[in-house]
Length: 261
Image (cartoon, rainbow, N blue to C red; front, side, top):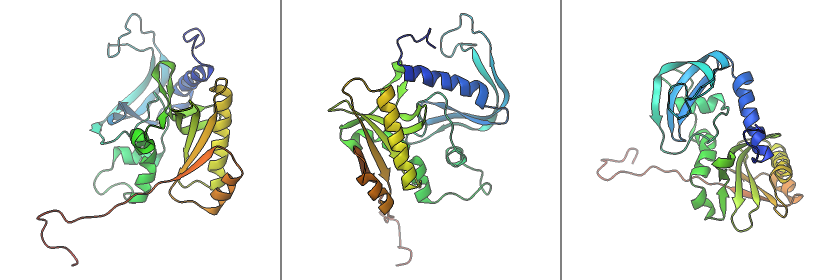
């Protein structure tokens, strides 16, 4: 990595190394993988049948060209789902990352009459909250913040990997250039999420900040509890935001008689 990316930031090279390590050592036969196209389309779902192996690509370097890559996994691809599109971004920008079973079921869906019952609306909103925020970031923060995005340097702000965990969203404050660590509470204990934000802020300060740059934090939750309120009273630079979802059913024009009226 040092030879290939001599000018790249240390944090970026570390991320590349971790990604290759996971590819070769963490993914095992029997694991399920999702291949994506961009952030809004599922290409295919398959099961790993052979651990990662290296096969020199030779002169084939163009994306899409046969044998264009040297690092491979053996995967048996399922017939369905294939080429499934979503209305909003549901995938992160990283080449390789892990999702839990709940998100997998939400992405892939289920056969009629099989599988677990559909999650409640609130549960679905929590699972897609991060993707919704990233997709609507400019509108929600009115241009004051921007998700970190520097593909040439390998810096992608959504699900940003560090040596001490994965930051939900890493952003930059447009007016000051400060980094902003954003964590979604998503049902976690207040003490846990505050500790995570502080830990990530410390890592960003030591690994990404240049001289004079600051690190701020933000916690986004559905509702505030006393533990979270008191914990943040003793910290500096961490903002607290509460999201609200309005949902109602309206009669469509010409929809006929109202049920229950």
